[in-house]
Image (cartoon, rainbow, N blue to C red; front, side, top):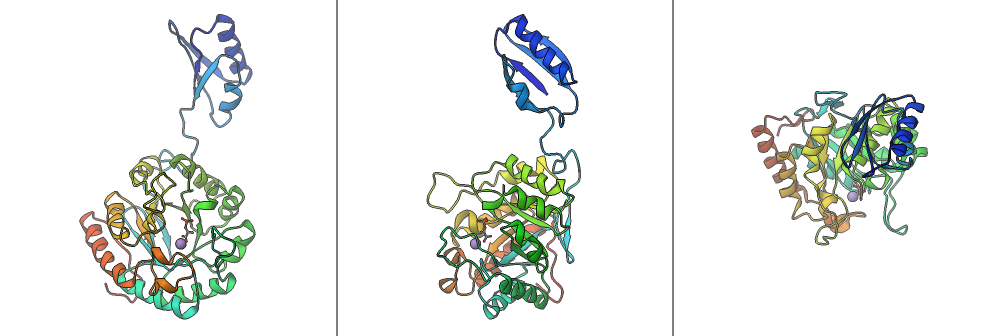
Length: 345
Ligand code: PEP
Ligand code: MN
């Protein structure tokens, strides 16, 4: 940790800061320039908090050297983590192709969509049973009935399933049906929820918050991992911005950025990032080209009848065409897309 003192700090201020650091049990290393004084502090940064140091008069800035996230960092694990769910690998050169409706709306329509996306090459089925809707009057999801339908569809079509959990009290219930928990953007910093899924050993798809930085995202991953669950898959789904022609602003830079900082897989969700089916194919290709470990796409066979996010749903035919592109791109990049059993694409 490096402590920068305010310009032209007096000897008394410098001595006071040095005393405080020593009182905290650390060894300060003083470097006095003409106008600036800098103090290096060596020690366990986990025990040395920046805030009490910032409160000392004369201290201008405290710069941690180690990253605040540890288990999620590349330093902790140099190789890319590969997360395996029912034979489907995610990360380290293996792409997750997650697709399905925004919400589980009924058995027949879910099975229809699941079959389409599986035949197109999707290897993980998505669908929400608990929906975080902006309006309390909008469809809130089918709850446990929906979870049962999702699990059955997953078994029927041989795909692991991912579904959102919104509340720590639902973790036990959702865990009975889901192969992967989804933590939605609105809950990325629901720390009690993160701790609760961290206590399980079920993989977690952690979506970036609407106004969260990459560091915030990694800190949330750290919450899950600190409880012992290291199976975290990050998801870039766009952030709020001034641009209003798309639902959110897709931050594709976060993909190679996260790759440098963390060993965790990161996938991209162009559906929620743009809200526009006409933009989803181009951004999916761009995501894979940027090094994403997969894409997460909402597909519906009849978007006009969808109970949630219909306008952004891709039609099954468009999804199949996109998957052809993504397979070609994956091959070009030396990556693989695991295929669910019994499907030849
Ligand atoms: C979803 O996946 O349906 C969803 C609500 O996504 P997000 O949390 O990214 O808005
Ligand atoms: Mn949705």
